[in-house]
Image (cartoon, rainbow, N blue to C red; front, side):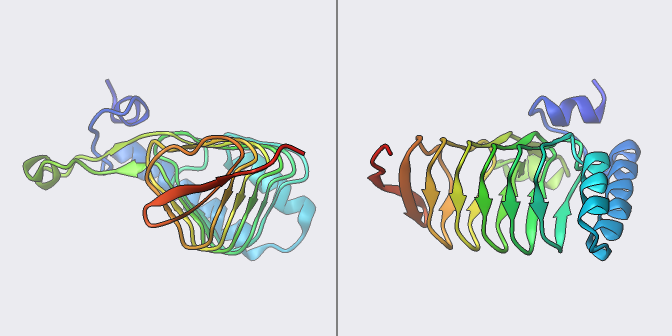
Length: 184
């Protein structure tokens, strides 16, 4: 398997692989142009080039950072405020109509727990899935492998370490469900 194939399958991989380094550099060049551009049409065209998929009516305010871009999929009508960080060394999916507060981090990147494996320089990744119509408050961190269900709300400053079901309000460190939302 190539290092990319290992990365995308959740295996240990070497991020310093020349192909992966070149991909991250290409992404960084596109992000620099995106973050320097104000025209909404040009920005959307750049997102089309940068991301694995982007729906209509998406607004991601600058600055925006990601590792690869091609493994990030953003549904229609998504709004992300200033400072979104997406470490997309596995797929990161953001559902239609989701609203993301400033300085949110969606992190598919992970590292081995075993000290010897960590010292060897390998990394790993697990997909992040944000459902439809989710509201993610300012400064939230979503950890690798987490799925957030449709229509949920995550309180500002929360660290989401486990899956959250649909239709809940959750907050804290670690993030936990506080209540279920009434269907409307």
